[in-house]
Length: 301
Image (cartoon, rainbow, N blue to C red; front, side):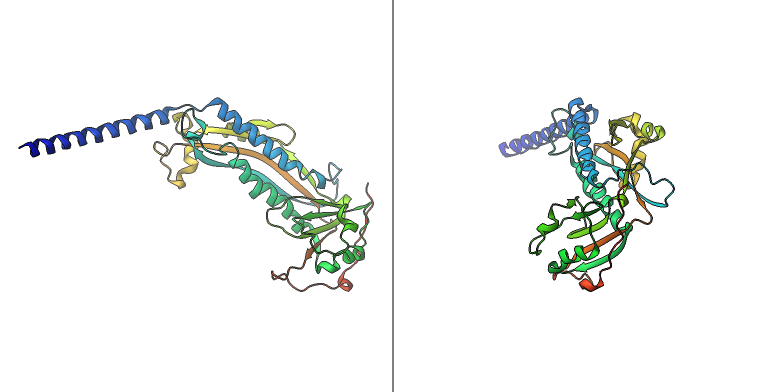
């Protein structure tokens, strides 16, 4: 008899605990769903994004042409844009589980995948010739091409100078820019053929559509943080339909960092690419010094 009472008591207690657990979970879910965005965390996202994106663009100012336009010369242009993504809402509310680097993850992604990827890659489209040289031939090859430090520039991307003979002759004449994908590569070109990097204003319509605010007037960087759990923002949820996200359970915010940078090259820019031989990679046929053709020097305007 006692065993039955004890069993019944345990069953009743277990049901009570299950109901209590469900009640607590529902209350926690409701609190999270109705939680408002923390102003300080939102501001931190904006400030971190601005600082990171502006600093990333500054690293390419060294290859910026001194001209504002190429006037009537034919040109080719390439665009570099920002991005938007979903993130856990709890990272931007008060008293919830902290998320490391929530304020900088999107900007780091944009710098790696967009800015440091697409700007250097425009050199690939602008180049007119490509040579593959042995390390021992690099300095002699630059001399053979007719490099003139007064009028020309050497742009390096992820350059490993170890083992390059007499490289100190040109080391202080080289400018380096970051690149996500290009490694151990040099570009020789006249300074007057460097690209123009323009930062464009976003259209008012686009600013309103994505609730964007200006972060930096010079580089034209915009950003927004939109709480997708709020009914007033339901239209913003529609663009994420393909992700099959349940915004009442999987609480998300939409983070956006927006900008339009245009990289403009002269169609006839005299850009020569030099890759350095790496025995660990298949790069093609190595060029001899006799293969190199002196490139046309142009005086700065």
